[in-house]
Amino acid sequence: VIFDLLGLSSRHMNTHVLRLLHQLFEIGQKKYPESLSKVFVLNSPSLFYGIWRIIKPVLNERTRNKIVICSKAMHDDLVGMLPQE
Image (cartoon, rainbow, N blue to C red):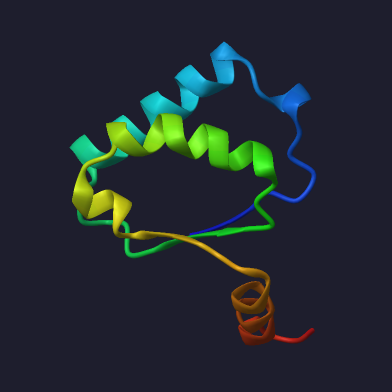
């Protein structure tokens, strides 16, 4: 799974969104624990790191280990792997 957070800003974040994200991760951990291989998070704005500090403790260690916050270099490598049209 690849999440591209380009354009994410504080106007997108509110308590409703954070509650929804929490529920989404909770359902995934409880109902589908082995269906997730890796999550790559691209173009993370500084806002994301604050959100990540809130969500990370709620996730179990196995799920946390499947999430990769990509650097710019890793982002370029992943984009290079996409099929060319």
